[in-house]
Length: 606
Image (cartoon, rainbow, N blue to C red; front, side, top):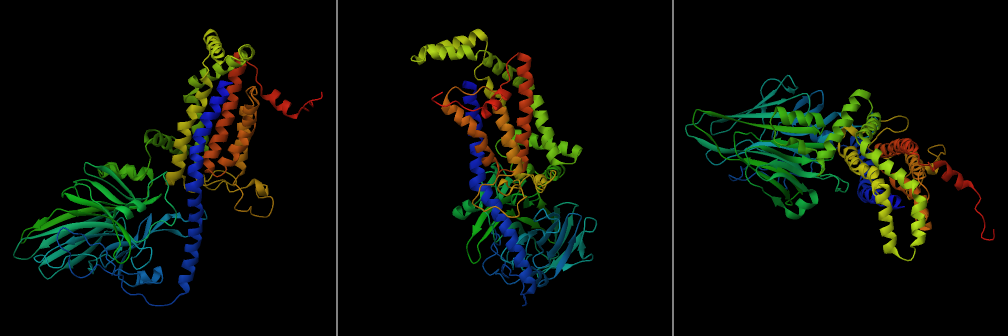
């Protein structure tokens, strides 16, 4: 039964890899995320009850840094607020209100440091808190984006982290009402900043520098995304979280938190296009510098005072003649990594390879089409679960000719089973002659002994790509199916150990997770394997008997969408194989194998 052995090896290796990822990286990550969400909710409730004043969120100092350097939010920027509300009321702010975002801009530094995502909540419960993407630096989890300037003695004090801007006119930022901020220093430089935002997640910061002095000046524009904490759950190899960017000839730069903590700083070559920032699994904050001015990107980790992570850029000198003005523009993306919107930004705003903000992985040429197909079907069915089922049907139809030949070859092998057993018995003591006789039989009967591997091998890239799509795309986050499946990207919440919720207790944590859909997957896998004759080797027979049980336990902790796909694929394979075997005149062993399980085995004495 070479086809059975190959079947087992192919399946086992593919699922083993994903099982290790799931058990050692993803499962702990999801558990820690749930725990962190619970802790954050308790902390928020406790902070509302706490009293106490808040001081101004720390600044980077009143002295302008030396030319060619970027303010790095030194240790003086300390935690000074006990709650988010206290941090927000400590400084004057401009309100943000768009269809997708709500929050405010801190007029001290003109920082984007208060942002919530209206369409996303922390859990599947619609009443759970909205995702808080950005936070004031006065909090332990400070996270902000800032645009400023670096000057010198001739420029005087230029806008930076501690600059208090003045609102000129409209005090609320919406997609139809930009906000204008102004600042004038003692050297005759007037800075006019216009901030606009679209309906989604892109801000545009346009700075005009008017030189009313009598001498030309030269200054630098900088931008930075600074984060004082990092995700409380361990990183995974499945996707990148941390500092990221695409600039210059080096292209994509990815620096995980642990890596940048070790390296301290990485500075690729200068660029005239691209983007950089910090990304999480589903959210990101990135800067897109102006294409008019060359800039130096940098990825860094600072340990002076408060530890922090920072992606930043510094432009080449911007020269402004006396009586003249100069304008520099920076886009700031802050929001959810929705595939369609990321692609639109890349195309409409000419942001080079902005699609790489989503970690499609090395096999992006499979993963991206897989997402496109599922997303297209979702728009038709209105349910991602149904879209996954339909995707399975389409994929199987696409590979039907190859699978048809494979199953036909398997059916022919079943018909020559008696001849194969006869050869094994005849040359039991001579493996060389046995193999030669087998190969001659294959040639005579026109059988490919590896044909049984192809239907399974074809599933592997689909399995991996679907796994990646379920894990990295925000479109799959909290996407429901039917019944008890409220999140296709999370494991099935039911458990066989409390009869799928019929018994009124939660199974202990040490028990393996095995939901209802995993059981369905195991049953369909069991039936599919019983389509073939039992292996003559007793050890192989035992392996194939217990393999569905083992896989049921292993797949129980995988995303529900993947388990549903596998169960549905098994069912389609059973139907397809049954039709082809009947057409080829090969006997379908399913019913005989099932009946044999319930027959009384004769004792040795009998």
